[in-house]
Amino acid sequence: MCLIFVSHDPEGPWPLVVAANRDEFFARPALAADFWTSDPGILGGRDLKEGGGWLALRRDGRFACVTNYRDPQLHKDGRKSRGAIVANLLRSKDSLSSLLSALRAERREYNAFNLLAGEGDALWFYGSEDDDLRKLTPGLYGLSNASLDTPWPKVEHGKAEMALALQAASVGQGGPLESNRLALRSALLTLLSNEQRAADSELPGTGIPLEAERALSARFIRLPGYGTRASTTVIKGDGRLEFFERSFDADGKISDERRHELQSSATAFRPGR
Image (tube, rainbow, N blue to C red; front, side):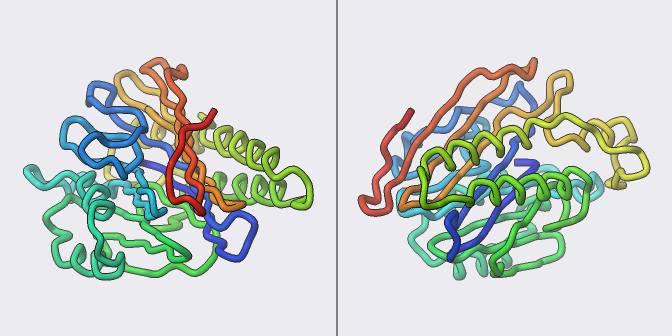
């Protein structure tokens, strides 16, 4: 993933909401979100080159998602795939806190990364470059290819839009919640599809050429051979957890849509419309 927004509000109508874009080369083989054949309890997209994932969750609600940390000088060939972090956290039965402590000790085996992971009412962040491990308090967070809540324009603007969408979806909770859920999902997908680039004066300096910095400043990226390949939303509320993914082809056109739902009372996924 290259852009992730998370609302963590355990006492609110929507205890967990995630909206994320995966940006990647289109030549890199991957599977759209589904249950993993090797691990049927895990749901998410699958990287076919290294076997890991970028955003996935398992039947009990534990989830994990990663972004890379953009700094060409930090990159070293031969390191482990960052997607393995997601897979390892979801395969293990150990507590997240113990797994994250172990990950700190081996962080240099991977190129620099950021991780958001949660289960139950807990949400954790770990940034390997700063060795920053935090259990997050309730709030709205944005993450791209720098530290958590680094105020890049696409992060700041996306957070503001997500806050408005959550506010709108929380009005009239005595009415039809399903219509609020659908409206929230639609609003999240809309904010993820924004292709507006930041002004040069607002661009970060991450060590890449200016033209690349401009192109990557958009929330939805469309470049020859590279771009946003999937937009994913996770919405938890009303005793359910919905996982929705929209995939895109190299022209930025929708190529696939997947929806799955977890009912907390049954702890079992079932496909939905």
